[in-house]
Length: 355
Image (cartoon, rainbow, N blue to C red):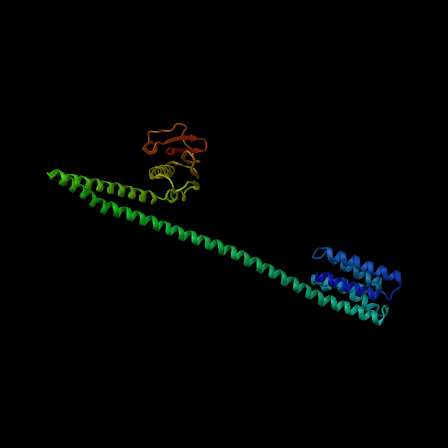
């Protein structure tokens, strides 16, 4: 916007200086100045700007009246900071000082000074605006990075809190099992012994009632301990830990799309199968990549572990590792199968959900 205002004022000065010339020459002068100014503006910072500036300077030497618009041309030259391109204009003004009246000289000199200082001011404002935009972008980028960093810190803290909660659940379950459970078991045995040696039917009835209460309490405590222990097994974290052993030799791609609301027996089975498959890959695979996919579907849980190593077409399924995986799957009503593909060895595990 500043450039447009500057150019309009310089055009007005050009028209004012050329108004002392004959009408036809005045019109031609203004048109030539406008043409060269537009060309220089379009070719700014290109290889054509210098030839255009020198061409206008040569035209000024041949046709001195064209110098009336030298302020506009000098404005465009000043933008490139290569003032040597204005030398022909200065030469043409020096060669024929009598070509212009005193008023014209005043207008020309004023237009040159105005072009120099206004262009310097406009460029300075432009640089300041660019610097402000860069500063704003840097601030926005820093704010995004800081937000992301804070999010990562919060997630890390949440993970630590979650792990601490799991450890505390394990500790509570262990304390209940080792202390309260044993005390209740001993109490049940003692009540049973008293029932046997008691000859009073009334006492026997009371002791049997007490025994039933203790058995109910024991059953509830066992269920609570199992529930705590089930929640303390973090399937995603355990699978991630299993896969760390592959990272030194293989590029691992893991897709763990499964919730934590999985029965403990299924969790233990999946962890065991993945551990066994990872161990086999480390021992026998000559590949470079491993893909692990653990997914929860509406009717079943699924795990697929495969690598890109070479393997024989016929698989010896009597190996201890493969038998262990098949037994683990069968223990929870699932199925483990193995296949040798062109791209490597694959372990497939499928466990149906309970009805």
